[in-house]
Amino acid sequence: MNFAFTEEQLELQEMVREFVEKEITPIAGEMDAENATRPELFKMAADMGLLNVIVPEEYGGLGLDSVTVAMMYEELGKGCAGVATSMAANSLATAPVLIAGTDEQKRMWCDILNDGGLAAFALTEPGAGSDAGSVATRAVHDKENKTYTLNGTKAFITNGGIADIYLIFANTRKDGGIRGLTAFIVPKGTPGFKVGRKEDKMGIRPSNTCELILDNVVIPESNRVGREGQGFRIAMQTLDSARPFVGAVSVGLAQAALDVAVSYAKERKQFGQPIASFEMIQEMVADMAMKIDAARLLVYRACAMRDEGVVFTKEAAMAKCFAADTAMEVTTNAVQIMGGYGYSKENPAEKRMRDAKIMQIYEGTNQIQRLVIANKVMY
Ligand code: CAA
Image (cartoon, rainbow, N blue to C red; front, side, top):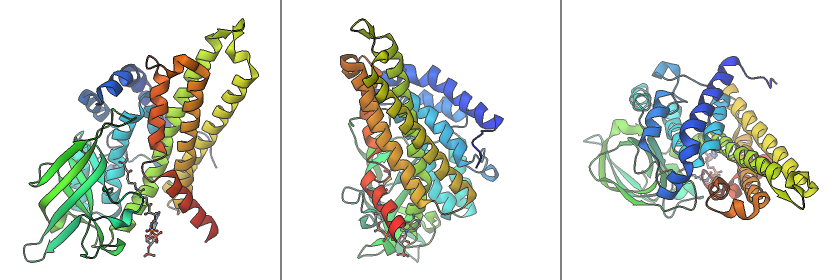
């Protein structure tokens, strides 16, 4: 076990930190109010290689390891968890193609990301959330014309309205079930493929979250990723890879909240002294710091296991669950330490508290993570 980072990792971390402090943190509140991000941020992120972090070198990317990617996502999470979510969705959507795609699919997909494009992962539906196997979107195979026709609706899709390329899960079996779940690539602009309602969310408002409508969308057979019926396994392996990254964003969110609360506590005077001198504040700060460190270590462990190629499903679920719970607790306590000032929209603390909530919900609720962990521990 090596706890030291390489020069290269530290340089990348510093580069992202500077970008976040200069370009994201100062406008996070405005983007939150506008319920939208700024397209120029993606342009800058693309130039820095932040949109294709998991693209392997052979497909034109940096071929970064997961620990380094987690370090970068933590920095993004410090500035704005919404922007971080949008950028991390590129990794989430790319994983299925890297796991099961053909060389041609990988090349096509990665080229889009290398050119600064955005991607979306569309599994969730109005009736299929935690029960991912109950996807109702249908894919009907036309063997003669070598095509699939997709019909259905996807819900809560990150980058849904702004992505250039989509990874869509649909069922090839009439009677549904996980054995029919299949992954498909659907490019933006495919006839019949429409962006539906944009969500007006509680938090991570700079990230774009939309409904997607597939109305007789015809795609070539060559856009199927993996075999028919392989989709559930691909989705689960993808979520294993992506959950530690949700943990990383959560750690960044929590760390930023703690840093601001500590500065405030040192300056804010009550009863004639800085509130930082009160033991009840110190206890909160100590607990916040301990949990953030523990969450960060769980994230790095899950990422390191992924890079080693060993099974890490349980560790990925632990990292996501613990880090998300930590983000919720720490951001709530940061507001508590800052009192009325923390509760005011004038201050970024309340945004972080709203942003933290989704960490316990998306990419598998924390109840689902606990289910995965308990199954692995007991059986
Ligand atoms: N890796 C590989 N295979 C796996 C796997 C994994 N991690 N987990 C399950 N499988 C396989 C099993 O081995 C099993 O295969 P066999 O039938 O061949 O034995 C099959 O998948 C079914 O497994 P389960 O019986 O465990 O499946 P289940 O129906 O009980 O569901 C679940 C398991 C954990 C609840 C799963 O449905 C799940 O993770 N649900 C949550 C979905 C989720 O995370 N959605 C998030 C959407 S993405 C998002 O939020 C993105 C965003 O916009 C930011």
